[in-house]
Image (cartoon, rainbow, N blue to C red):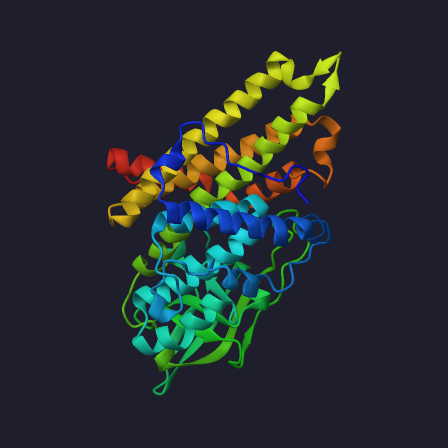
Length: 393
């Protein structure tokens, strides 16, 4: 369990005054769940490289799966700021918990809701929202990460079904998934999405072992060996990279909020420790270097909070651009990983112990700074947006 349970978030610029009562109620309910359900289990799960049992169903119970999906399909119909606050509280518990909810919400439920048929929405979304069904998202391949347009996974029209072949790698929830939203190329070379179900013959999900990061999350591959996919499982309303990239925009937005939670957990722990740990006759929080670190942590957290709040408003108004989302993801993950590393130093040797969250968050954030677009790729997205010159390739 986190050594110092969180009672209040740092709110140096009174951001709570900009939230609705519903926002604050949602945040508090998820925070309480994290304290009671995640914190007592997370260190053992991370140390032992095991996931938290029944995590998805518990996330479903608190409404953390697809919270912005319409109520008629099992969601809660919440706004984007509510979604962000939920991700923030989940990642304060652990990036693996937020990743599980983020994949289910933004990478599986989102495309089915946006691009699926009415039959697909009614068949899959309610079960995904409750956590009865677990989803995965297949885009990254062994040979193609930052360049998804070069994917090799492909499918052929066989009359009454599609025949799918290929492989996806670094897939959260893969070993556990009941369905996977998989992006592949049709016979014309155009990218489309397919819903691949666990029962389909030739579909396997080998687990990825020996991770130093996201150890409380199941990661694996999606392998397709002549998998017959019924034609009704094709996402009918999108073609091209717009489909998967719009999913990534939703996921990146959730990450930009989520990592604030990890940073807050590290900051609050370091602050409390600095008040209690005495050296040279006084608390170490009384020394200039420690105060400098803590002041910088709070400054960066505050900047990230305000960035996310405005981004959430833009998303609610359908005005947020992919480049704006990229900037928030890149800035906030870098902020969080820097705070995790520096706050560990405030605790000295104790900072490496499982009783404190710094090393676990720092290791997790090494994955978060790479997935959903690497730090460098997001820099180039911003660079292209402001110069009009494409630096890719």
